[in-house]
Length: 397
Length: 197
Image 1 (cartoon, helix red, strand yellow):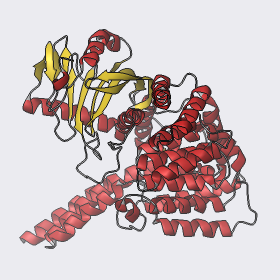
Image 2: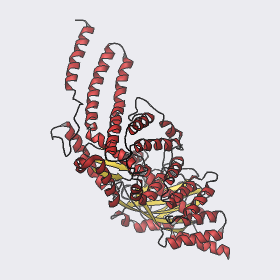
Image 3: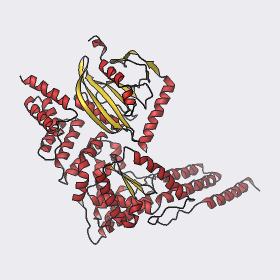
Image 4: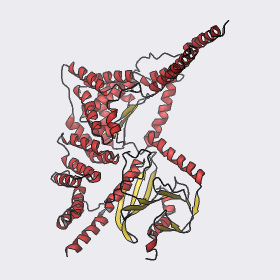
């Protein structure tokens, strides 16, 4: 037997063994209240997720507000229906980024950055539907098996191409594994989009909102202060785990155009449920220091016509911290505008006082500081502001 | 979770840094912060190496996860307390024009950016930081795994540079354990030229 024939024999034998070890990735959707059998690889995935869920429950990152949690869980149950509802445990996680995820054991995370950016309940419903689709279609299990099989296949591919004298191709084999390790992969994301759309519209939500949230996100990122962020929008590569955004928007718009009736956006219900957290979530978003994105977001929220006092105050805060030419005047204008709305935070008058003091307008500064102290008699910075008032009074006498 | 990894990474980095350059004993007595103010330590502290990238020095008695005193010195306009190899990284940055309240806000934002949760500031008040008047405050926060923490801060801007002290420890037992010592250290902070004043 020649050396080449011997190598071929070995490769074929190993290939047979590797292919025999491959597991099927063709799995049925999970049924309501179904749990995997203990001896399966799926049970192992669930066990790991059960452990992470224990950590999550005690984490300070989980929002504990009963009303907000009840609201999000109610929306989730409306989307997934009464049969699957008991299988889902939704956690609102205090993170300022647009994100949601769902583990194979039924725990779903909705990040506050998503709740901040969704314009209405229909947009939240679509995201929940998308994540639920990953769960129902057992995408985690499929992904796990694909990675294992891919690792085996890549070994085979590397051996074969190396023998054929194409070492560069062997490197490409490993490269494709790396691409698969990120996220669910574009096909599963596309399927989750389609099913998520179906779940949300069957629950009575407006189909066009599915594409609307993505369109908004594209616009927001286009306004980022960081060029690298702006470039991510157009980027498409082997590593794109989600469908390219433009393709995703087109698909979702096409689905919406097929809908015979327009559903509910539930905008007012959504604003009522999330409104009390608006100031806190915007504050957390501003910590990320992307002023371009942040101001774009506030302008978008202002278009809804609700919580104007909070929103003008928060935009003033962004200008105050950004400190570009003209920002001080912009901030003062926004604070003054905020002060005309009943929901303006007490801090609005403190900031007016600060800017008037800087602009050498002691009388206006004093008046604003006094209003602040009246509106927030227990303020954490009361002693500091009182010291400013004292100094201004001394200056005036 | 990424933030957990960041926290672990930070802890490991600290240990590795300590292993490379050594932890030094500081106090009891006067301790001179790098190119900056001085404080009087009533007890012996373990001083970790000064981090020239962020201008921060950490000191601890029982270990950095149980109590940590951070001395921040000579922070210039546009600089951040969070180190990144990417100078364009979007992080909270100090501005020389910040008011006392904005400085406290900057410190709070930096703590939150670095992974602490629900940082609540209380009792902001003017405080002597000879030769200037600075600002003093208390705060509560939580680690991401849910451990309640308490802390104190003091800051001043001198010649457009920020100088500050931060102390943080678990609210249960460890914060109170060295509360008197920390209070005394904060009161003792002054710039050398005003040491007698």
